[in-house]
Image (cartoon, rainbow, N blue to C red):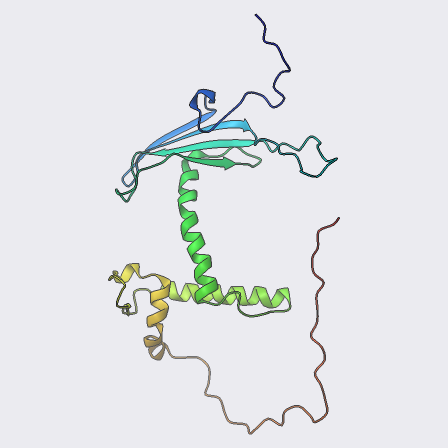
Length: 225
């Protein structure tokens, strides 16, 4: 007996929590790691999210579909045995299909990237200066990158000055925040190519009755209506 009713508008259903709706994977990759045991990735190409309609009246139109690839990551164990591994779902969208071998490593590296941005903002004061021009902002960013490189190079040249509640760490594994805390002891041994400043008297300052011009303003970037 033929099925009745309107056919599916968006194709066969794919639910992450219902394995019976999963078709044959378009790609699969398996590998064994010392820290994670057996690592298995399966990918299903040609998927898209459920299109949502806008709540405003009169805009219930067909929404654009973003076709991508759903990836399921499964590991045998975690580096911390106190935690139970849970399957992880990832979404890939791009002009080329994903290479499953480095995908899961890139996802793990995101934690290091997030902590790096936090270190730049909170410790190195990346966003504290209120710079008015993009050129000054780029120059300040490059200076902080050079500072971070110097901290990495000085990792094995300083001694760890840990706080009372911090655990000891090997010298070759000191994080940049601890290297920065002990970097002042290294500065006297480095020297400086800059000559000693010569006194030149007291600056006369701004003439009486003059005012500095207003700061240059830049128009805010707004979305088009």
